[in-house]
Length: 263
Image 1 (cartoon, rainbow, N blue to C red):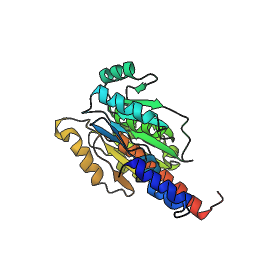
Image 2 (image 1 turned 180 degrees about the horizontal axis):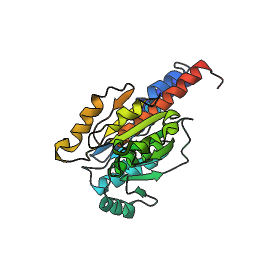
Image 3 (image 1 turned 135 degrees about the horizontal axis):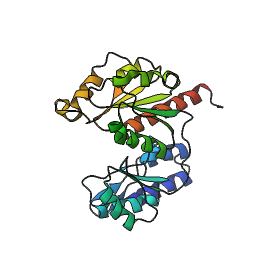
Image 4 (image 1 turned 90 degrees about the vertical axis):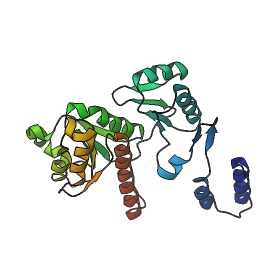
């Protein structure tokens, strides 16, 4: 049975009173996807299910494939986003897609098709250990902003000069959720978690000398942290950290509404 046939049956059931609108909405969450030739199937209902639209992973796709997917998604998504787009690929995409916006540090391309509402009163605060960690942190920052969250950036406050971090103790103590990005030995999330009463999302980066094994050393440091309240995402995964931070803030908002339904 095709999607249009399934949708027609569902709408007829609503019209006959055989299914409630709420139950129909639950079914719709698992219904819609759209093929793009033979190489992709766009999950249009991911935002309905999870709160965030599907995002395009750039590497491994041709510029033409990325462009076709973005143009299709533009028709039904408030924001279209492609990650890990290198500058030369971005130049080709800009020729194919009017209105494309490119963030070169974050390596993110986006099409804004409508106003993005602020999804939560909370803020995502992002720290880096060093300047070399900024590209991964910017991937998290731009992702958070495109998903509708306010983002606070604090760069180059690693443990090698810990007084730089300590001078921002108030910022850390007031944070709603923290993303901490670090390479080398990856110690910064442990220090930050010892100062914060909110969730800390640690992001190891592939910055470091040979023995860091492309980010494995900071990853293991973060996984073995003696500080509590730390969750760790994969190496260089700023995007995943931002989505997790957003889900934490959205969950807090849902809980608050359950406690006070009139809020």
